[in-house]
Amino acid sequence: MKIICIGRNYTEHIEELNNEKPENPVVFIKPDSAILPKEQAFFIPDFSNDIHYEVEVLVKINKVGKHIAPEFAHKYYDEVGLGIDFTARDLQSKLKSKGLPWEKSKGFDGAAVIGKWLPKDKLPNVNQLCFRLEKNETVVQNGNTALMLWKTDELISYVSSFFMLKKGDVIFTGTPAGVGKVAVNDYLAGYLEDEEMFSLKIK
Ligand code: ZN
Image (cartoon, rainbow, N blue to C red; front, side, top):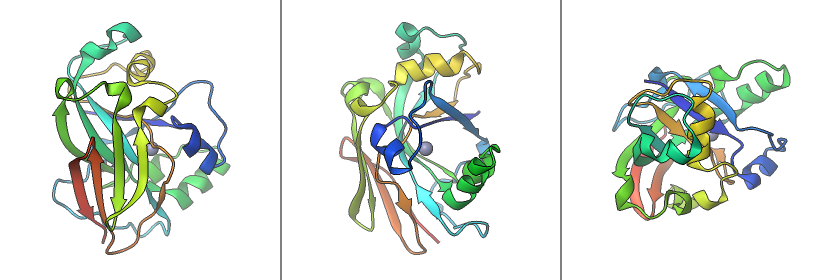
């Protein structure tokens, strides 16, 4: 399986990192080795002093598809989740400034937290989901998918015009404002519509 991530999909997050608003969705891939094994702590890698959390809503692709039209995209997922796109911000900034691919800063081992999955039809409208990340029991990111620049179905359509989507692929739909640094002993917990989707310790 592959993990397809969307960058710069919430205006306030674009502003907090002083990025330009993109004309098209920003797309990158994490390898499946980036998935943090369930129940495992996240270990800060030695190549970074600035690991950021980015909480994101996820969808899991349920069948093969390419060149999917936006109006049919909803047929390609029936589970919604929540995860963290861990980012070595210091390394990413260095790579970005040189115009180099930023995979090393986003695709390292443990950089993809994938929480539990909820059936889409048990949730309200996918375009109006509230979600949040708590760090040490304080809310640090609070988002709503209504604020996405490109909605989930548009993302699936766009991404599938470049990459064939396969059953089991996961799409990270971008992070809202409030990204920040983690430190040893932090405890993170993510909630989708008030349901706890994952929790983990930083080591
Ligand atoms: Zn992200």
